[in-house]
Image (cartoon, rainbow, N blue to C red; front, side, top):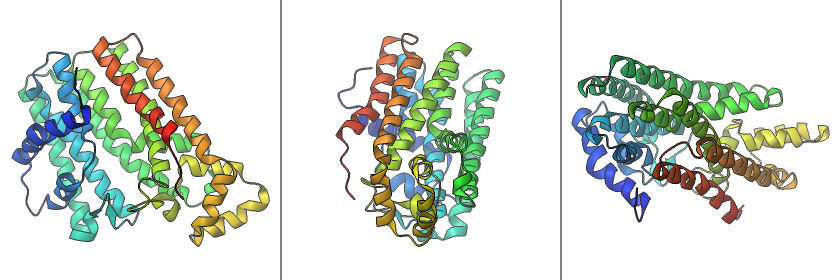
Length: 331
C-alpha cells in the first residue's frame, strides 16, 4: 500500500471506478437528482468509497466484487448529509447549496430514501452475484440495515435532547456519536467480513472504528467553530443540538450560569456562548478526548493485521492528533 498521495488516490478511484458504477446502477433522473447533487458537487475526502478498493488490493481480492459496498458507503453518507442539512436548517455545505434548498424538502427527503433502498438492494444482489456465501450476505445486510436505523436514531436523539439539555448524560452523548458516525464504522466491519477475517479480527476492527469515529466527530465539532464556520459553522449550536463539547460545557456551568446559558442558547447569542466555551477550556478538553480515542484506536489494532494495513490505520488515526496539535481558534 504505497501511495504518494492517498487523498489523490481516493479521488482517482472514486472518479474512475466508484462513481461510474453508481451511475450505471442508479441512473441520474428526477428520482435521484437531489442525492446526486451533493455526490457530484461536494469536494470532500472520498475514503468511504475508495477504501474498500485499496484494502481489497492488499488482500488480493478482486476489487470488482466489492464495488457495491463502495457505492453503498459513499452514497448513503451523501444522502445522510443531504438530510442532515435539512434537519440543521443549513443553506449550504462546503459552498454547495443544500439539496433541500435547490430541489425542495419533499423531493429531497424522498429522493434520499429512494436512493438508500436502491443501494441496499444493489449491495445484496451484487454480493450474491459475486459468489459471497449466503451467511456473509446476510451478515452484511443485517449490518447495513441496522446501521441506517442507527443513523436515523441519532437524529431523533439529538432532537429529543433539546427538551432538557441538563438531563443528558455521557452515555446518551456517546450513543449519538456512535450512531451518527455509522457510515464509516459499518464500512470497515463489512469490508473485513468480505476479506474473510475471523470474528476476533472483526471485533478488533469494531473497536478501532468506534474510537476513530468518536475522534473524527469531535474534530468536526471543533471545525464547526473554525474551518466550517463560513458555510455551516455553529449548526448544532444554532439548532440547540447536543454535542460532546456542549455536554462538557453544560457539566462545567455553575448553578447561577445555567439560566443565562439557556437564554443565550434560545436567543442565539453565540458570542456569550463561545465565551463560556473559552472560560471552561472546552475546546482544550475536546482535544484531550480526541487524543484519548486516537490512542485507543491505535492500541486496538496493534500487531493484529498485516503491516501495510496496520500502518495505514495508524496513520489514519494519527491524522486526528496532527489536527489537534496544529489547531488555532478563529472566533
